[in-house]
Length: 419
Image (cartoon, rainbow, N blue to C red):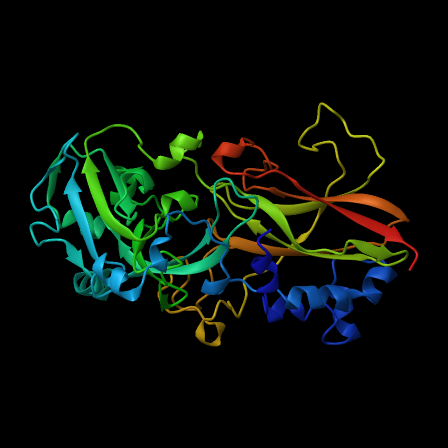
């Protein structure tokens, strides 16, 4: 778990928080647990929920970085020279010389037709979109952070090049210290850029996170954001988009034996849990669930004595005893440094009238969950969590393979003993 993810979660939702004892004893019957021990310590769970925050502050995101030196660490003069400041940034959109796509109006630095910051902001006046997306590394165990991203659909820019034919894929990369060996690029089918399935968000050329212009550390001044994909598709310090007739992916990430066309997976992780609990006390747990392409139906937990034998033919704990946790509703204050914790009007996926999510949990986003586990007997336990997706499939299925995104079942140890 990214440590900033837990320490920077605050004020998730007052509606749910009020259910857990902060409005007096009258709230206790609403708890989804009935033991007297659970009722007696319900405020402890409420306190854990109160520390949750939905959006991550930009400075608190976990970071996966590449480059020697890191591109954003150059001096201001060098940043200006290499186009990593807004006033000098330019984006080239050109045909691939090795597998040319036929386009009528390439955007290039040499021809003086590259898209600059002023041109991007002019497009933003009429085409800007914003949506929620969780950022996760393909090989990381937990999300890096949850953000509100804003930008211009890549297709809006692509069409300005007047493409004609022989265009099958698009690949793109950012500044890489003028060193070909440091180039990090990703690719997409052109169909994904030009057309969004119903309910999906567009691939965007992004310039804002949580309402603020991107910092260099977050990939600014401009980066790519691919809503349904892991972080390696959302290339930082974007400066060049290449339109190609090549029929195959050419992502740098493929060199590490990674699946470069994998949608994000659904999985659960703990945010807060005690490592030791007194005998007779329930266990307050909070967590988050990444909501991948298959959606989210349930979050479950399992509390199993450490000395209870495991079934060697059951690597995914399907024979364990699982119990449902509570998926928390959408927050009223979204956090992340937004003014008053409020999402801006026009955020995709939200009803424009009541400003509430059209569905919950939202795909490619996250949901929080909580449970107060009734007091167990003394001993040491393995505590695990998992998701059940909208198709009724339990984590880590249907895609348990790590190189297409990690979604292993998280396990922690809890000791119940005399105080």
